[in-house]
Length: 268
Image 1 (cartoon, rainbow, N blue to C red):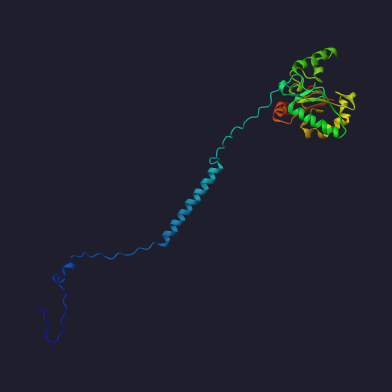
Image 2 (image 1 turned 60 degrees about the horizontal axis):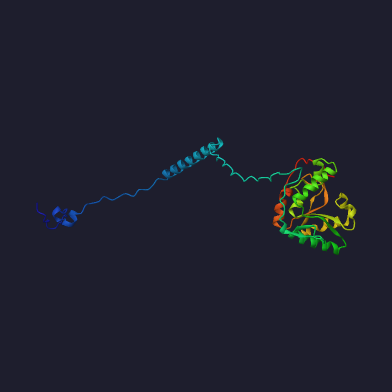
């Protein structure tokens, strides 16, 4: 049939034949259009609800775990603290052991040179005597450094003369090797204006004792055996010791830090 239109009639369009399609268009693949996907709000809500349920379940499970004590952390053992070792109690009849001062470290504190102390203590004592003298008080040195050999005579011979027991003698005099006088830091002091009370508890009624009580620490001296002292030694208001340098402090630290729960001897 001819494609020629009849006269007076419009020409009818015919679909193009395959041969009429250009080669480039015929060989290009035809890709179908991709439809865009939109996530449903219901899916989002469902996902969030599921997450909330899981979180709530986890929280309740954790609380249950804690209530059973499973989650409680195991307490760590405390690191051991260093134990303070108390001073060794090497007392004999309530008197500690003390070393004997070397002779070359001694210096005279009396006019005749017979009473001596370690040099630092001697200088401090002389300054203290001068200060007391300016106040009208006479501090009289009675006994300073004493060797262990000399202490044997003071302790044992006087004990025999007075028919005292060892315990009775120890109330007023330390056994050899246990006297503060060995150290060169201790000194017995009297009132030059009232010699009758030397080495007596009544010394604490003198002007010398009153002045010492108020001023001795300015010169680094302290009373060795006050009333009720922890060592249980009889009250000796005349017996003072120097604690003005490291060596003297180290020498007496045992007596100063010693704690006695049951004193074995009464104190006046």
